[in-house]
Amino acid sequence: DSWTFRETNHKVSGAWLDWYRANGDTDNAGYPLSEVNQDPLTGQMVQYFQRLVLEWHPENPPDQRLQRRLLGDIIYPGADPVVPETDVPPGPSQYFPLSTDKPTGLGHFVANSTRTGQQIYFKDFFDKQGGVAAFGFPKEEPKLRNGFWTQRFQAAVFGYHPEMDIAGNVPGTSVPYRNFRVMLELLGDKYIEINKLPFK
Image 1 (cartoon, rainbow, N blue to C red):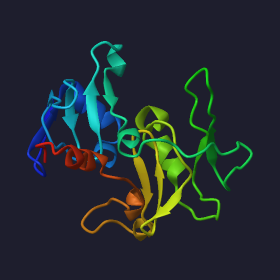
Image 2: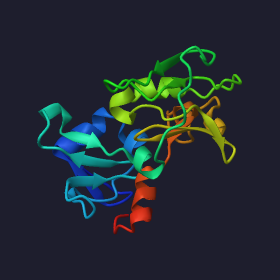
Image 3: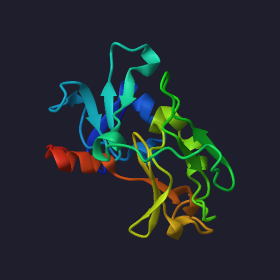
């Protein structure tokens, strides 16, 4: 079972395609930028995508052998100081408390609104696209960067795109514009560029 993407002429197949389909497809991973290969940086079997690097961990149970590399931690190391659990943003939110004895979070919220009331829908996207298993824990509260609300997670960076938060469908399709009001930064592209890797 395999699929070749005409956009990049790379193939995703087998367990890698199963993971891709189960974890948000292009919305979450983007297009493949390599075949499955031995990573020149780590020696692991990996596949590079626009938004992530997918690693093969044969030592894990079968349902955990494919793991998303924590590019958010690698490219944007560290996390902001802990926010008190009582400092709740408006609207739906979830808090991930920092603890010393088990991995419960880094002391930040994922929410649908900023503290100023701007709707960003990050929690809806987080919940729908796989939560902590897909993105890791939030490393900060939402911040304005280059005019866009963003939030960094261990394995991804969320961005709210107000130009897509409108009624109607993408021309020529039945896909609502609002499907793209939250998009992930192209961390796979950035990681390839930083490390001067031969993938595209």
